Image 1 (cartoon, one colour):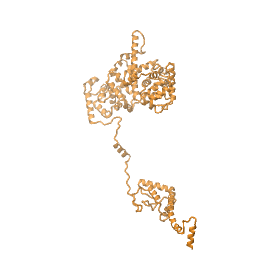
Image 2 (image 1 turned 180 degrees about the vertical axis):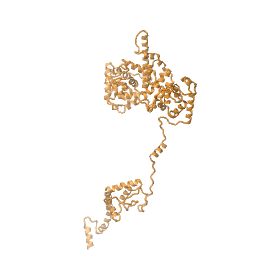
Image 3 (image 1 turned 60 degrees about the vertical axis):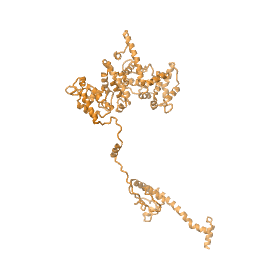
Length: 600
């Protein structure tokens, strides 16, 4: 009965599983099926709780650091894989860890939890063939790769990557080069005409006058660097000297012997490239080349060049010519406009090529880069025409008359506000000759980077590096008003800006940056539109055939302007001379410049 009653009870239970036999069978097997997942979930829950404890996290981080560093791992006792030791102090890490601390056997973690813990705390083990096989010992740890110390690593890196940049030359002089240099020096000392030209005996040494050939034949430099080279070899003595004294203690002139010249050449100049060699001679003991360092070079050029012989009787214009050439050199070479030319600037320029051409060319006007006398004549005459009081300074009203009043008032105001470039005249509100040289070179050739930077700073009212619509309109309003006063056909601002945008193609429509302007070879027309009425009208009425001819002649805008202006000035000079021969007045106030121009 009892069994039957139980069976009946089980059978009549609302949640029973069929008949009595089935119920008994279900009672015997159901707990077995539910126990395994329930215990696994509980162990996972306990493991996650243990892993969230601060001490557990510290232990895991310590195990990770030990594993990365290759140190032995110290963890709870009874773990496989070599984790031996004690746990950190504090509350128990898990029930199994607490039981192990009291001497009870440790219950195993769930397979996934143990695998996760071991993968975090231990380096990877060797692969296991089957889960039933006994755990294998960890594979032997690989030694970490040896790393070189700082000095050894730098040395190895230098050996791996050979040096490829030599700003002043490779610094290596072969025996063959030394032999050739000695032969050149011996030939210079043995040449009969060298001592004859110098007027002195070469047995004792070479005088300063002989260093024109030394600079050219030994150093590969222009001959008019001879005075500076002589000063370099004598420690600052001579006409171009920067040291104390110009002669020997007994009053005799200074000379350079063969041994001294060879020593200076081999120890200081032979290992340098020609640009670095010229820089070393020009800088005269400083870390840069200043404008005054070029004066001995220009004095020697004027004294010896056949194309400048007519200036021998006008020392004043010799100085003006030298000053103009120096200003042009620093305008083209000293891109930072600091007045201190660096070796990098000299290397990247064409100055040495122009100096070599001036050394070879008898007609100085063929050297259009820096040294042309025609270009000096144009610059000086333009300045002299504007300087009505001849104080060698220009004020705002003087500059407004430039180019037959071509410039706008707003552009001239910006120039005298010293926005594009600070004046070097030393007089407030006055433009000196150096400042005028920079201005006319930028005004007459707006294709150079120096010119674009000059006029960009002039038009950029807020100095943010972007020309916006209100800035462009500010300068164009005056141009529009002047065209209306001259009864010229007025061009709307929107139309001309659309034309400029199509020509320059800026990265952002409606704005112009300096990078946009430098990308376009015709971008200088933008500043003509904004500040020079004559050039603006010429741009609007340009002849396509003239444009093609200008592209074919290979001349810059400055070269074309200087050529046309020189012809005009020459015709004016001839007319002035004819008037004076007829008894009329005229000419330059001091007479000297007219005489120099007539001799030319």
